[in-house]
Length: 257
Image (cartoon, helix red, strand yellow):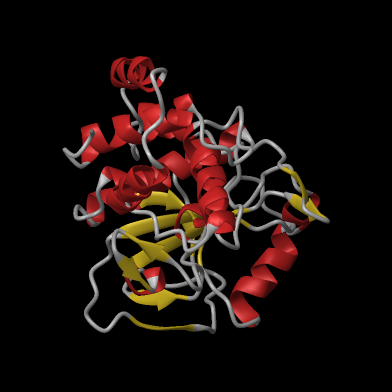
């Protein structure tokens, strides 16, 4: 059951200036509930929703006996969650998106990332919340439900490879490739991968920002793999990754090649 709690309004937000909501951006907090709530309501950043971990100590100590979603910013207003970002040919994703922060204690220690699993209850509530949002904002398409790393791959890794994007798709939320199309592209690419300039066009066609250099190209690959091929997200262009990208474009942009 989806329980929305608006007890803790954020201080930092502003008006959308007529922009319609077109994307949902999913994040992890990399911090416990209590500190995440403080950051998102008092410290210069914000999000529309905060989804706790039901077993995390600071959430339990706050006295909650059920998993609820905290609405920190009204959807009619712009929250400060995505920062420098780009999706579907446009910068400034904040102006047209809803941000969801999920409590998850991911860690980056000197470039070595640890990504804990999400609690199944969190995923169930996330699905309910996304269904609710999409019902009220029908202009949000399948490819518009994205991770922070999708819209800001050059600086972000959230929500990480442990968010079950395929499970969300099976629940009717977001995008996923067709296995048959992927297999067909894999057979094709065994004869040789497309030139990188063509792969660049394919990434931009799907929605990603241009890669300005080799490092950015690999960072974008890593973000894409965390979303669509989480078993291996080393940021290397290979047959499977390329096949998934082209299969997604064939399905969602009518531009597979």
